[in-house]
Image (cartoon, rainbow, N blue to C red; front, side, top):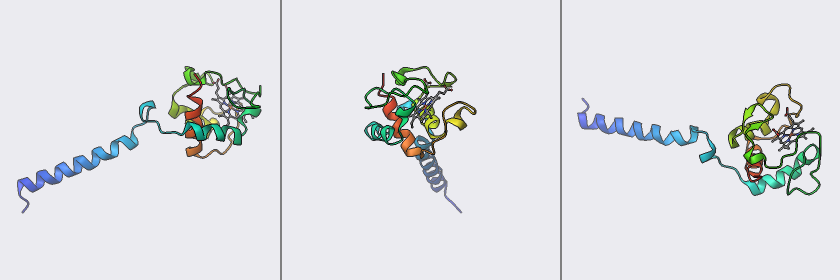
Length: 125
Ligand code: HEC
C-alpha cells in the first residue's frame, strides 16, 4: 500500500517533469533561438540575393521578389502571414507549405538553417 505522502511526492514529480517539457513546446518571439551571424552567411550561400535586394549582403540586388529592407518590422510575410521569427523560419524552410502557390520556390532549406536566416532577417529594422 502506498502512503499518502509517497503519492503526493509522485504527483509532484510528474508535475515537475511535465512543466519542464513546456518551454520546448511553446513557440514565440520571446524564446526564439537563431544565430543571426550564421544566418548572414547562409543568405549568401543560398543566394537569396539572386531574387531579393537585401541590405548588408554584397551583390544581393535581385528584383524577382520584394526587397527585404526592414523585413524585421514588416507586419505580414508575402501579404498574408503574420510576421514573427517562427513564421519567418517556416516560410524560409518551405514557402510553398506556408502559402501554397506563391512565387517563391521551395529551396530545401533545413529547419536549423531557416531559423538562423530568420534571426538575420529580424536584424533588418
Ligand atoms: C527564385 C527567386 C527567389 C529566391 C531564390 C528566394 N526568394 Fe524569397 N521570394 C521570392 C518571391 C517571388 C517572393 C514573393 C512571394 C509573395 O509575396 O507571394 C518572395 C518572398 C520572400 C519573403 C517575403 C517578403 C515580403 O515582403 O513579404 C521573404 C522574407 C523571402 N522571400 C526571403 C527569402 C530568403 C531568405 C531567401 C533565400 C533563402 C529567398 N527568399 C530566396 C522569390 C525568391
